Amino acid sequence: MKAAFLSDRGVIKLSGDDARGFLNNLVTSEIEVVTPGSARFGALLTPQGKIIADF
Image (cartoon, rainbow, N blue to C red; front, side, top):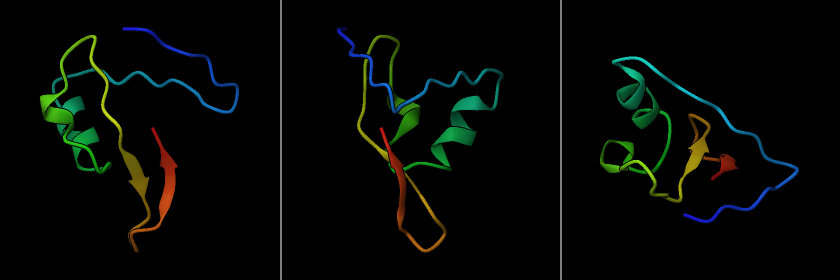
């Protein structure tokens, strides 16, 4: 998979048994089905549904 550095973005790393479920509850994309080496578009929303960040 090719990647591009975007200076206004960052990278986070989650680990542990509950990491996928935790992240799946925070973002709009279905994290449970993402496989290593793949990518998926999504967004982090406020409780009101406004976009905080996209990825």
